[in-house]
Image 1 (spheres, rainbow, N blue to C red):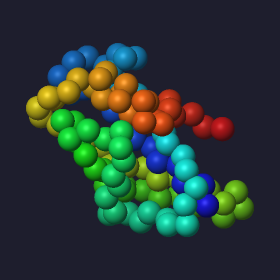
Image 2 (image 1 turned 90 degrees about the vertical axis):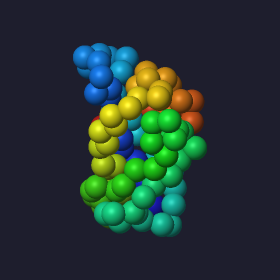
Image 3 (image 1 turned 135 degrees about the vertical axis):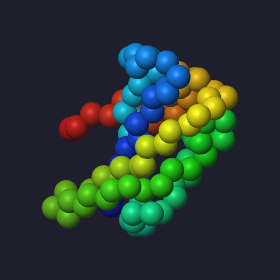
Image 4 (image 1 turned 45 degrees about the vertical axis):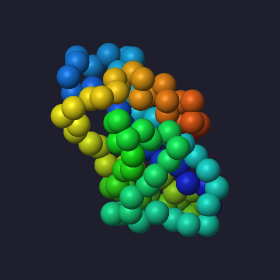
Amino acid sequence: MKITLIIFVTSVHHEPTEENTKSLMKSFESNIRPAIGDNIEDPGFDSRFHNSYEVAKVTINYSLNECLVSLAPLVIEIEDMSAEDYIEKLKNNGWKDYRID
């Protein structure tokens, strides 16, 4: 099954801009379907921002053999890493701008 993770990243300390606010996605094939409440880890996640995210919503389309997985948003009081740097790290680890195909 094609699994697509979706995450929203923004800074809580700066006005939202195109550089520090993004919805990102990462797709892969897996026989394991995430469930609400699961924690997802990924090499792109950084402990200075956050190292795992909880599954907030799962949408399954059996006719397309696809599963969309929305990860819960986080509010981080201390940004040891800027949102821009975090977005760049995610992109360097296979995350892409979210778009509906």
